[in-house]
Image (cartoon, rainbow, N blue to C red):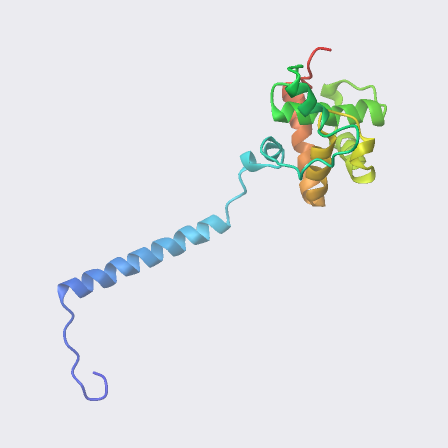
Length: 169
């Protein structure tokens, strides 16, 4: 009783509504708690983002108005099969051309890939060769250090599984 007033007995519909609300609330709390303890999905890594990444507009100059990749596509010159393969080819080119390493793809390590990605952090995009230096210069610079470390591991795994799939010259 509340302050001398007599409370009415709840009817069946009110009891059902209270039970349904309680069940919904407890279920959502259980699922919310279980989600916070889950490990992040490995399929949602950093490397897959490159396939959909859109760089800022290319900085046109007197002589060039797009990246090598875009010139090749426009002229129907072969390019690697997937956006990921294009990225892998450009990273591999940093390994062989800039770091001057003569290793086989299956020998690559995360440390080597981190050094190769570091070139995009140290140089201007115009001083980097490849299919898409502007795009990858922007992509790598937008990542934080832990993301770049994750990306290095994903690149190594990709190369060890698929190799470096460039086009025949």
